[in-house]
Image (cartoon, rainbow, N blue to C red; front, top):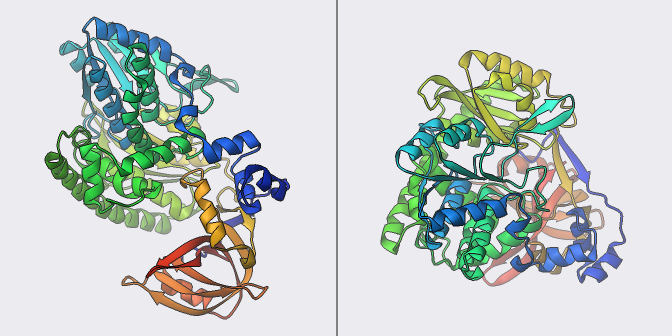
Length: 582
């Protein structure tokens, strides 16, 4: 059956009161676009002005981040006194980009700085005892974390005992414990902790990735050291790249930053990024969040998953086009291998769920004995999409001291705060961390059954929570859709997580002239006529044969669709891209 025909879907028209004609006139857009803006949380003329015309000059500075002032003062003192600073990042795209920003930026500021990217298999996530002791043995004075550190209190206490200064920049949820129903934060004992999720942090926009936190901290350091503001802007494209790659919502500041970053990436002078864009045949194209999130970003992540994230860091640090091209080719090949491994593991996970009675569970926790630990998160995300349930993939791994355990990654749905759920059963874990929508953990193998049982006993998810949500911006008849509306969508770009492309619905559509296209027979094209007799060209991408059997049955169907442009041989036509069918 085509995946867009599902019994577990809950179609909801977003309904926010307002006179959209008046709002459209006030914002300078059509009533339909005004409604979409309202649906995205735009409630005033000022909000609309920022959304439609906001620039990076309007973004808040690091002085609003709790401890950023203290952290940059300490960094500046360490630079002046010639102390050795080590940046410790993470092995994913956000961690690599964060480390690149801080390392290159600190060197430009005169620091004696280097970096270490933890190895996924040997070190696991973030700080560990080996990295701390190694830094102390090598004469490092200050450890500066990025995209990690907020959960590393034990490791930071060790660093303190060894005489190291630890500075934390992170964006993950702050660990806490419950005293009754009150959450009590557990901040690490570092000299400074910068994380927008601190309850005492006044930064107005909380959903920054680690690279953006690093970028803002660097901006403040440059300001204090008299380095021109424009010098930090070379890192803006990297921060935007990480924002999309780490699947942060494209709302508020993130949307403005990514919008600007995409323009810069198209003309990047970074040899590594240029080579990665070229080898993926994206040169000369207008880059979108799709290109970053599904083509370029996975190549950066593949290095840390299958070999070492140092390869990705070296790509970004490449000094010339020749070495950059060689490194980009290696990353592209690794990503292709990762893709094949993911498909195999997903098929195995789906088979286990369907044949083990696990489909009745609210939370899926699947053990894959042979799954490469590095792709567990990707497989968990795809399993979550398949069954619309919070999903964990667990596989064999080991702790930094070599002792065996199960390691797992989870991906969640909107109704389920995965990090909070793990806190409730934290007595099971050797390590864990994450946020509402994703988490990582390690636990003794003998605890797997108890882990699965307690997650489901505590889930509190309802049947409606587990229905796939299809959020519609409006029920829109075909007569209201034209190329002018499609062109106006450009005002809302870039589209991505949290700022999805507008989705509309029309009832009782009759289909004709349907034909399957493409070498892989993955497109279905034809015409659709709504109840008013208005006809539009329609296209569906996916299991075209299955969809043909449904839409070609002679009955009317309701469709959820995105209006789009079809450009062919210089001719531009309107087409409706079908996303869901009822």
